[in-house]
Length: 309
Image (cartoon, rainbow, N blue to C red; front, top):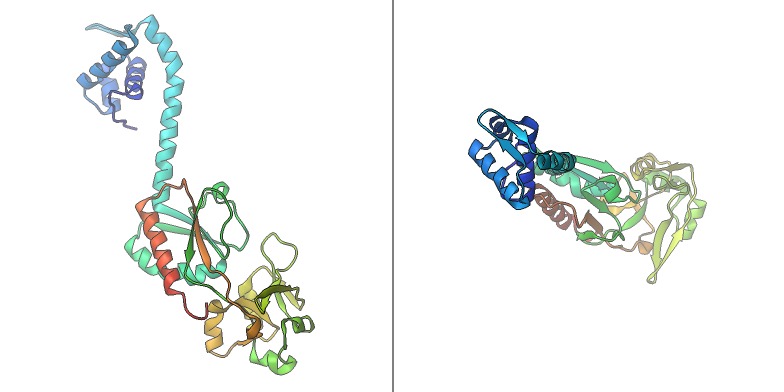
């Protein structure tokens, strides 16, 4: 790897180590990608700085002085470690530009990420979006994600949080066939007597509780039924097939509602909640590509806002 040398301690020491290892100014200069005269000047500046001769140079040979040999033994491991650290930083920078790792709740991927994929890829064909879907909480720093899209505001320290779009509403839905066979629950508490299609967060033993609101007061219902899945999408598909009642974000099932495959139930108890959030660590390098992607997702969130989200 070629380093640009300057009158810094690191540059001078790097030049000294190159000469000390090669015992030849010409070969050392070629390895560093600089001229012979520039290398000689840099080593001379180091010798002036430490106040002692480090390299003995004649027309026939280059050799280390005793002080130079002792300095080489001490600084060579440090220089190697610094070069390794700089190389790792460069590799991370390249990865951050070319690959962006996103963790998102499944419905966030559908509503916020999918709409921008085509235009973003057309504009930045060299960038790979590595998208992981999951509703479970994550430690972004430990998992090395660049962005996270959540249905609740993150509580971690040193995290930038941007609200995406407006509120969204979770509703109970069922197929017309199910309603014809089992009737419509009159209140959320009537769900206890119905066939509900429960879902649970990954890593959780118990299904998520369904949330409803009455007179400004939120309450939860523990549902029961013929299926428990860790995927809302599977529960929705089962509801379309008439297996039972599902609980979903309204926007994510709007197509099924418009086509009549599902119908809304318990609407008076379905109150909008806060929207999605885009999160990323404060110390994450903000590359131009990452900045554009964040802006695109934020625009997608704004355009997805409507009266029913």
